[in-house]
Each structure stands twice: as C-alpha cells, then as structure tokens.
Image (cartoon, rainbow, N blue to C red; front, side):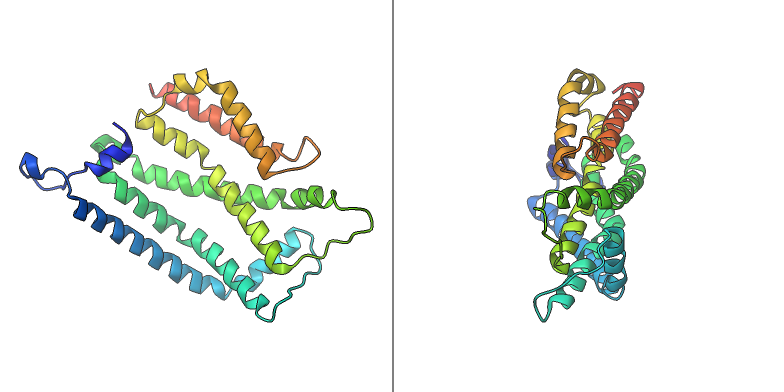
Amino acid sequence: MTLLERVLQRGPRRKSSPEDSRMTVIEHLEALRRALIVMIVAWTIATVGSFFVAGRVIDLLLERGGVKHAIFLKPAGGFFVDLNVALYLGFVIAAPVIIQQAWWFVSPGLHTHERRLILPLILATLIFFAIGIAAALYALPLYLKVLNSFAPSGVVYLPDIGEYVSFVLGMIIGFGLVFELPVVLWTLGMLRIISSRWLYRNRAYWWLALGVAAQFLTPGGDPFTPLIMAVPLVVFFEGTALLLKLSGR
C-alpha cells in the first residue's frame, strides 16, 4: 500500500467502530487546510522579517558572483528585488515549520514504527537542504564564468539586478531540492515502495539521470563544472542504497 493510500485511509486516534475507523473526506480536507494555514503563516512571518535584511543578502550574492555593478530599469525595481529576496529567504527560514507540517499531515497514514522516523527525517531534510545551498554558493562563481564565456567578443555583461537575483536564488533553491535525493530514497525504502535491490539493478539508469540533471543545472562547455553537483548526488545515491541494504530493505 502506498503512502498516499495510507493517508487517504488514515484513522483517528480514538477507538471507534470499524465503520468510523477512517477519516471522512471533510476531516481529511480540514487537516490539509490546517497544515496549509500554518505553513503560509510561518512563511509570511519569516518573509516580513527577511525583508529588513534583504539588502545585505543581495550584497552577498553580488559579491559571491563577482558582480561589481548592476542596474534596474524600473522605478520600483529595487523594492521588488528586496521583496523577491525576502520571499525566498522567508521560505528557507520557515522550512522547518513547513517540513514539520508536511510530515504531520502524512503521519497518521504511517505505522507506529514508521512514525519514529519522522523527527530524524525532518532533521535530515534540513541538513541536506543546507548542504545544497552551500554547494550552490560554492559553484556560483564557476557557474557564472562558464555562462559568460558564451558571450560574443566585445560584449560586456551588465546584469539587471532583478534578473540576476532571481537567477541565483532559483539556482540555490534548485540545488537545495535536488540534494534531498537521499532523504527521498530512504523514505521510499523505509515504506517498502522501493528496495536496495531495485536501486542496484537500475544503477546505470540512475547514474545517467543524475549526470543529465547535473549537466542541466550546471551547464558549461567544460566537463568539470557539472561534477560539483554530479559527484555528491552519486555519493548520496550509493550511500542511501547501501544503508537500505544494511537495514534489510
């Protein structure tokens, strides 16, 4: 039985008759509504607080990318750049609450021994997301250097601050999400949706898919820049498959 089927069939904590052992559609939607409200409120509060430090974050991104001068072409351009940064930063800050609420929503569909994994999985999700952000910031100068190398000779790169910030933040969030690979594989393995045997049997396809993903997220004419993402992903894949095998999954 898949996790989705378990969630849809999850039952209340109290003892009840077999006919009442499952949540009704209304109760299920009410639980979803509550989780979404908590997520949105947490994100909103974090975004408001982040707005006041958005300028410093922009300076950090410009410095890390080696950009000395940037422009904006609209009167309200500076405000919307700060707002964009605040939204992204607010999401990162509110991530613990968002992840906790997501696991709270699906937890009634899990068995007792599976619920014990929720806290470690929340911590692992945050840790790997942070590793992804760090990897993105580390790769940013190389990433921009490679992309700018495709410009015709005599053309000078003068970035629009809004496009630059959106590009960098999208890259950072993308790295953070992709680096959740071991958490996803481990969770699916613990739920017996996949197995270590299946992962090993399809290892070649996984390696190929991870390499293609790294190439798209870190494009360049050289063969070294994509390795910044590809090598950690392959290590994550192999490590997770090994842990699943050792745990009998």
